[in-house]
Amino acid sequence: MTTVRTPPPPPLPVRQRTQIPSGGLSPMLSRLAEERATGVLMREGGVLYLSDGQVVYAESPATPGLDVLLTARGALDEDGWREAVAQAGARRLVGRFLVDSGRIGEGALELCHLGALYDAAYFVLGPSSAPARFRYGEAHWLGPVHPVPVSAVERETVRRRELLHSIWPDPATDEGPLVRADRPTGSTVTPRQGAVLDRVDGVRTAADISRALGRPAFHTLVDVRRLAAAGVVSARTAAPAPAPVPVPVPVPVCGVETPAPIDQLPPFVDPHITLLKRLRDALEAL
Image 1 (cartoon, helix red, strand yellow):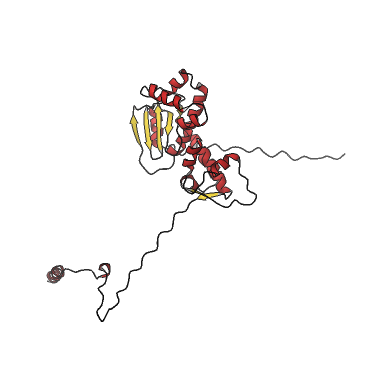
Image 2 (image 1 turned 90 degrees about the horizontal axis):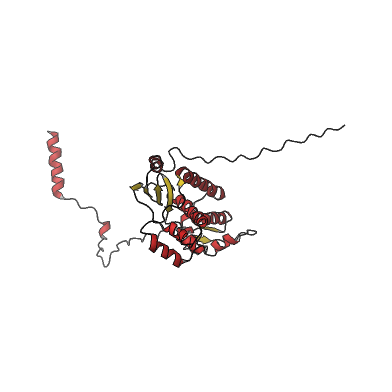
């Protein structure tokens, strides 16, 4: 009787838990979460609004706002958004007004709100050397929708960093103007990537393309890095510095030497200073 030994199945891959640096991505934010503070944290990449120590909203110049995401997806028209801000913005209850007036469902608002929050928080919590500030007691005009713990926001931010790095480790395409390259033979571009590629013109950045498409900025970064990994796009390099203009050499004309330019003259030495130095040396020699 022949015995057939089957090899054991390979072990399933274990997903590594995202590691948050000691002290969090922002020590100030961690401290505010422990204090259960309410207000706005201002960093170089944008702002985070806190209520009772949880993140309730985030804004960044690099990302489209909640209004852009809602109107671009057809969940809300621009007139409805403007009316909500006019009616409830001063009371900081725009989100509640949108739901109560029937302009958008509560689930749809929460989904878009979380998408905008995590999208902006990724840039707000980016590496920065600028000091952060916190203003206590300030609330956002949107009002409470779906508070998120600081730990969850930091964990998602780190996960997104790792994802982008695994796609293409060079972050140069994240901020600079994008240019097209000759598409390599055999490369394929998905419809989503094609929409991004159509707007690459050597001037627009990934943030510009996100606003034009009405998409979260992070989603655009994913498409851009995949296009960069395929050799389809790259960051525009800075123009080379102009060559220095050579200084003309004075040439004698009719036996008379042309005066040298002022920047080529020998340094002027005050004779009084020279005399004082000689007197000092003489006194020190006594």
